[in-house]
Image (cartoon, rainbow, N blue to C red):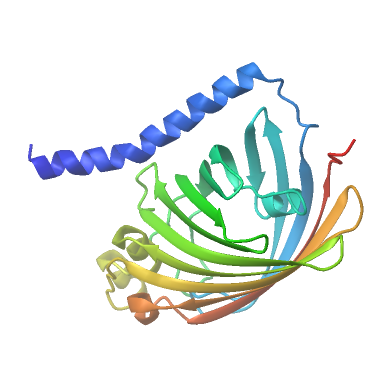
Length: 282
């Protein structure tokens, strides 16, 4: 076996080792503390009206449940629940998360996330393309507070189950402006990169897919592929209820702009949500 092959196996083993380490650390913490859902939790839902890059790009409506809770020091959340849970209180990552370093100016965390993949039903214009399988991702994140309002960050995640999910990386800048004591206006800009495995499974067309759909073969390489801008308004109604409205836009860049799967290079979405959370002050 070649040294290059051994090196590739070591690289693929790193995310798995990180995930195992995260799990063992979390179990140890849970044994030391009482597991309590009432310690810190949220439940709610959101509705999104948006367009998609893939296919004709028609507008569609999506309902997403939101929930978050703690198991000892381990944080578990879904969708935008992490943002609402910590509104006016701090910050948190989505997924099953453990803060590895938590300082006043910066935070380093690791999390496990479910990636739902993608599939096309029989009525879709792209039916016949291979599905992108659901997989589990391990993610590392670094956040640095430039000031009370400005923050920059970097995160990367890797497909743990080797289901053509590949690796992604993003860098972002956020701004938060308090509006009174109970409301916040926030904005962010995110620049996303992915390796060729991810871009080919999500934007590429292989030989089998070309034969099934009549599309041209398309195999992009790794690179920067997406820029996202968002603007949101969050309001804390009282000790328990919190809601938000968010506007998002996404702009494809690089080789994936030429993918035969792409119907729209620019997309937009509006999301409205509300949730109930515990009152930490009690």
